[in-house]
Image 1 (cartoon, rainbow, N blue to C red):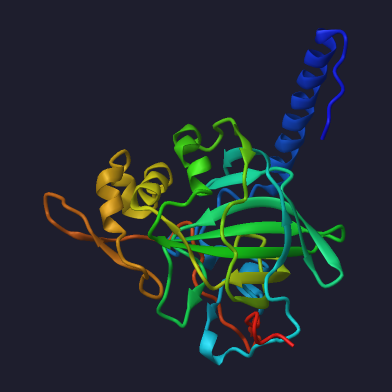
Image 2 (image 1 turned 30 degrees about the horizontal axis):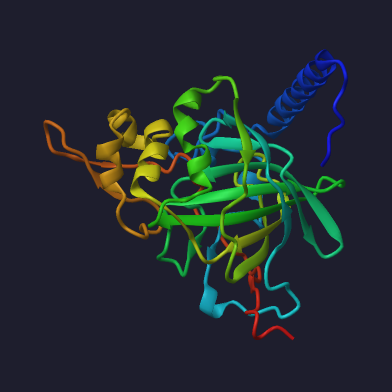
Length: 310
């Protein structure tokens, strides 16, 4: 885009200042709309946990997340080989949504059929909420939430597993210490590139939000091939957003990072050894990840490979 230069330099300064002011006002408005129920956590022993929630969270029949049994799921050859996303580089606002870093900004849209869903926010759940073939549960799951003009939602889920450093996460993970507390002011992330990978097959099913009010009718697109993040990046996340017993190790990312070196977790909860005076073992509650919900006969469809699409 070409900008016309004003003869009065003060006019440019005023225009830029006004633009940034409008940008931040819009971002704060989106953050306010997108905030989840901060009193709700996924610890089943808590009075604010899932056993004590009302509405769809406890009575819904099409809830998310679910286990995706890839070999037993039919291929839908009418699905696009890749999700029809039009993401762009944009300035983002990074904030604490109560359990995860959250990004908002004008990042583009996602089209399903003849409906276009605009980007709302991007946030994380740890460990991953969806499981694959019952036994595989990745270290991290990223949700890209979209909404259309009718208020209908579509979410793209991407997994992260330990491996090479993620260029996408490296753009803002160093800023996580600035938003460790709820209420910390949002942090600007300029020119954030949507450089995550969305290659390979994906699963498509109809489910719900995984946070209250657990609204149903959400179209889920779950990418089956994980992205990677380094041990250092995972340690950065754990240090700023610890769950369960990790809170006792807060501020010791080099120790916390060593606890997560496996590619998958057990189905619901897992044990982590913690060196204490009594050398006891503690259960880590999945406070930022909802447990797998019943499928209730729902059909999960798998996208075709590029060479098998008709």
